[in-house]
Image 1 (cartoon, one colour):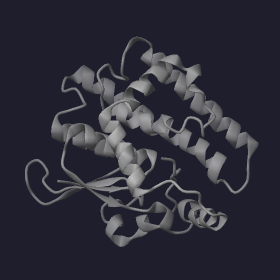
Image 2: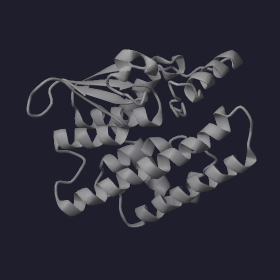
Image 3: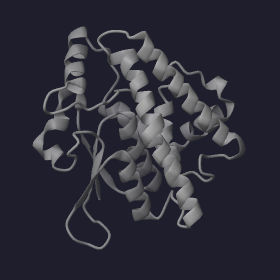
Length: 241
């Protein structure tokens, strides 16, 4: 059994997608980051960086006690190795998937996340920052569009590289990106979106965190929790579903 400690952010969606695709049995433990639940001691024991997602594998390979894993990229790789699915076993194929997984972790996610932050969460609009991250998001979309020109999925076959990247393209409108400007990316996006497991993962998000309009007071309270600079640190999260 996989215990999934989760909230409805792009990084959270990565893991629910994998679990739905693989059929691994799992239980969801919501961690409402807007209420500061990521700072609870019981969560910090498995995710010391106070970010979701995190998992606890109650039946790890080789036996022993439960094994916890934090950081979405590490979780995807752990689960892929556990199941023997969505990452090739040969050297070249595995390397192909891993380099694009790390591309997402080091590029697409952080840059799109900053894009969303300065658009939606920053207490003041800073034109330079907004332009900087909109352009960098567009550049990364262009990299992915070129990559997908001659293949169906990012590393050939559907893999954890696709699961990692897709949730960060979902909020493209909020990030001032037009998918029609990236036709290969748009075709890939539509193909991933149509997968039943992906649809189930996003339906789960709607159940756990139904969309609603926050009051100004709620927005300010969440902003202080998510982007505070105190000793606890901020989550660095952009809460988009």
